[in-house]
Image 1 (cartoon, helix red, strand yellow):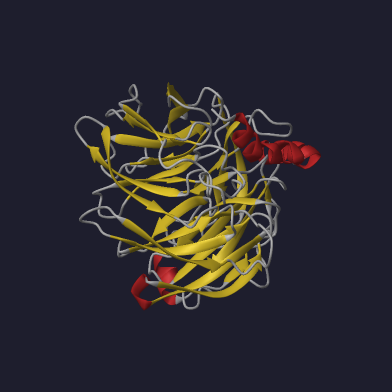
Image 2 (image 1 turned 90 degrees about the horizontal axis):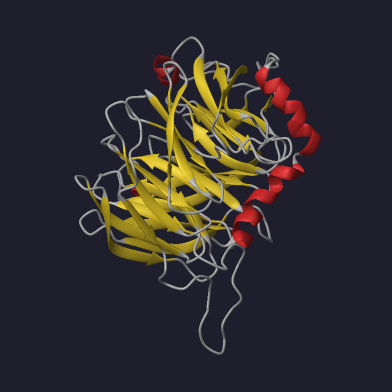
Length: 407
């Protein structure tokens, strides 16, 4: 593990200080503030038809090992019409659950344990029972996802620059790791060889796997590595749970790719680059798994590094949103040319400090932002017609909020 890279990710948890401590009790015990703003948009007819009624579950990721952090996985509910969040307690016994994912059958929740001795943990949602943890074989796992078939869990070890595969049994529990691949080529950082070598960008002193996901067609799994400026494509053997590398895609030197999301039709994907404050449109060949990274584009946040975190695209493929941690904003893009082009529209204040992660509600009518330094979660209504974002009232306090998973 490269401890320098990991500490760069984690130091901001301590900066939450007293705000996080106050949010801890607020999340566990106090009712959430009213969140019915005068500026909330009227839902469209189609949105109303898809919007469920009654409270929906919201799970919250945090760091438990930093000052002001949480005590486990945060529990809350949200109103799908107003976006109002109410606290509902904590699932204890999970250390540093900084990223969360749900099984396709919605019966089991999975969390990374982002520590030196990295692990992944399964939690049965019906009774909130922790089903056990398994080692990821690496340090500081920061992302995980469930393969669409529901039989394999994919995780990315940021600290050691590796990706892991675990089997999922019929109960949702995890088995022992079936594969572990460390990113050793290309070498980390831009221009690491030759007389005109460039210094590495932030987090590029070693490989740092930041995401591990399945392509929409299900044929490949892709790992995004911030340290090596590379998106790796693998084939997953769905019987053995082993990985075979089939392609690499390289960003421009020093981009520091962090997070990738696919357009709904699966031919294009959008890449958030943390180190150089850009995004890029990528093409994807489902036959070969090859990703081609396009030209770097602006995040609309001005000069300097704003540490772009996560990018999302709407289910209809018409708009994309980028979380900018340094700028404390969300960038809105129009998706054009059947997914081949992003057009910058505007940036919207996120209403918190350091938005680490963003997520849509299942219907796509709400967008949640987990703000790490302010220990808050903000909610936005998503206008289906033009993609505009409007705040859904006051922020919800949640200690060192780094992940929000609405169900």
